[in-house]
Image 1 (cartoon, one colour):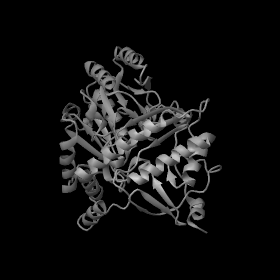
Image 2 (image 1 turned 180 degrees about the vertical axis):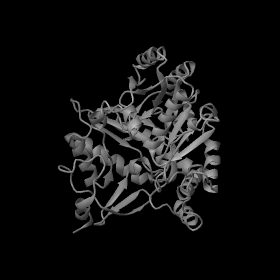
Image 3 (image 1 turned 45 degrees about the vertical axis):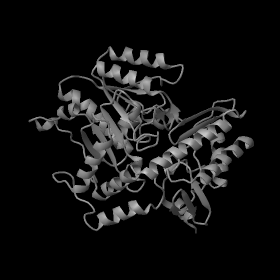
Image 4 (image 1 turned 90 degrees about the vertical axis):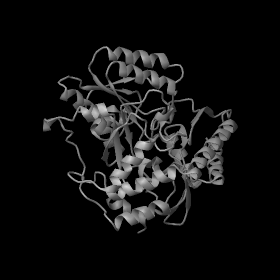
Length: 423
């Protein structure tokens, strides 16, 4: 049996209905923006493997940092102990985070980073003896698959089996063009109740919803409103963080900064699972007390894993390099050129670009389901052409590694154009 056949025997894959799914492609090797399967077929990874791998596969600089750390200290518990890699990560992050972020909490992945933020928001008010048990989120949001993160997510088929088992969340419209007032008015109405602990959002770009984009000025208005009513704001930067939007963080476009930020994915350059939730000093002080019961009783076995910290340090060094910043700008300019070329195509409904993110909505004349036949047809077409793209319904997006070559990008664009002619 080949690797794909052996995989079917035991492995249960994410977001997969195994009865109808095709065998999974077995990847044997990766380098730069390319992957090769067990049969030697080459693929361009045009989505950076679910947005985690901005510096390319098998990046030697990150690998060397991991190796060096493994030969010094691979892991030590973070309860009662600390170590230099964790302290360095904190110091380096504070250099690039918004100025109001003062404390950080390590965890394992994006969902848990969000889980921690929501738990902190709820417990902060509990510690004060104030009853605020609900949160606010955008419609069609996606924040993860653990329970609080799932509750905050608005894509129903991900969560409908668990209705009645989650915290209460009120959703408001996303302030996309034409809906700005509806979004603000809905939030303002909720503020009057004093029932809400936090408002969580994906800043500027809703990833899993199909790269839905909205303006920083509108988010500033919403964050300011929350601040006026002492409702915490949580920026889920799991997807947008570390350069995706053209700045280190999407929040760098804001004038009013959130109270908490959730980081993961590109944090370690796609190597080792790690996440960080950051907080203002005010939030930390809500847990700083002689009463031990007011502490944040949350932790993970691999919290602040030294090897993951080494990968994060190497990744942040790459992000800050002149070469990587030039790559981000180059990709952005390529996206803008492609947008100009394709936006008037009769099959293209809308296009949008922010940083290295490009999204295109295909005109179909009907509502396309998230994992429906149209999406699957597109996905299989791209795979057949050696390009890894994962459409969201009828929305095709590109979010490539920063090291992708211009010629590789051109192949991705050409393949999308071919798909438009085929559909």
